Image (cartoon, rainbow, N blue to C red; front, side):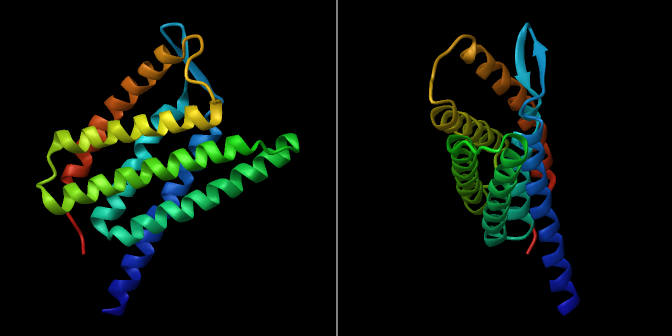
Amino acid sequence: MRKVEKTINSESWIFMLLLTTTLILMKSVNQFTFYLLDFKISYSVFLLPITYFIVDYIAKKYDYKKAIASIAVSSVIFVCFTSILAFIISNKLLLNTVIGEFFSFVVSQFINLTIYMFLLNNTKEPFILILFNYIFCIMVYYLLYTLIYINVLSFENYWFNYFMSLGIQVGISLLLTICIKKIERGI
């Protein structure tokens, strides 16, 4: 029995580290862009939906507490990473950068987790509601990120880039929703 508990705990830590790594990778590739219809879009758009999937996977396979711990640990490590990286690169830390990314990530993850746990416990996890949950949380993330980090809501091409990024992430979320539906509930 004890070996089984240790295996379960070590597996949940692996996914917690995966969430942290994905979040750090999302920050690292944020400056790298590609052009889609003559508009610059960051490569990090591919990673944001994956963070919601990882948290949902942890909640479904292990439990709610481990998902909360994953969000907390990855957020704290992310703030430390961002602070150290900013100090190494430019010797200055912009507070709105750290607060914007941290706050938007944490709030959107808690919204995602709350809605997903409701769906997990009270419904048969309808495909469309899980997909809408991902889309809603991505929209919350961008709203908070825009308000805090960028501190503006409209500038040239912002809304077109927003909808292009959202469209890409809806496609990724569609695939992730198919995957999360196939995962068996643990514990």
